[in-house]
Image (cartoon, rainbow over all chains, first blue to last red; front, side, top):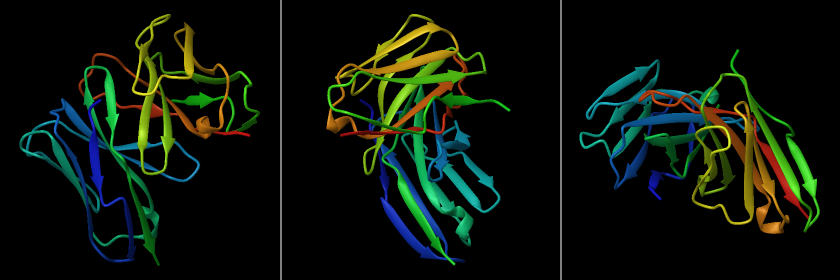
Length: 109
Length: 114
């Protein structure tokens, strides 16, 4: 089993604040992905990062892949209530996805 | 619009019953997966299949079996349901052989075993 640990597990912030979520593993992955899951739905892909040190931006979300391709971070600037959800990182290697433990984000208006 | 469809959103079953969870994808994907999601534990892989009639055990296969008779359909079977199998079950599919492939998920089945 290849484990990915996410921190924090829960995060409750006010609208407009910034936040960072971390995803760490002892394993190297071909790529690392971030998904968001809303209540009652399956996870949906936000981004895939492949190269060590890679940074991708998706509007107010910034994703970074660690130099050694074992860890990643998700930074949200000026959080909005619509960002509320469960954020999951996933390491991809071969044909398998290894999911993190998840970070539950609540953005309070 | 690409889709992974799970047959039920909510199920309530009695202890000892045989339970079938069905999943169908319309993307001609080779790979299909069954995960179980519990608070604080993330998604744990039960079984996956990379081709018709092929299956591989994931991290928590005990008490479960699977069937893939057709490429688009992947079924999860609880041979004799127990209360500790109460959980959210997620099916996913992905295209094989691509480094940038993504997992497409169904909406989930919340199973309660009483």
